[in-house]
Length: 79
Image 1 (cartoon, rainbow, N blue to C red):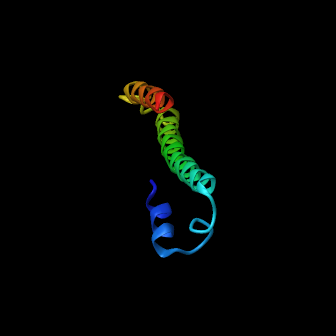
Image 2 (image 1 turned 90 degrees about the vertical axis):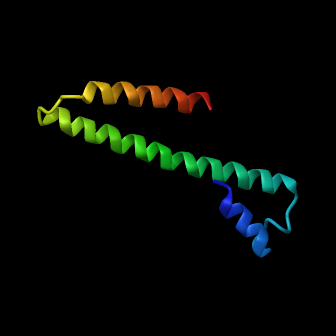
């Protein structure tokens, strides 16, 4: 998650080496938020697949998948 920030620090390029600690904090928070967008995209893709399965009448196991997805969403909120 923070590899890009580490790499920018190693290279010494950009603002990270020249700004105060608050900019480092901002960069770390930005990296975390970017990582969550990937997680949200993955959840959205799962929901779309389940939706398609339900619309095509293939609902076997979809309810279990929905329950797992709900549980995963709860875990994500708690972090």
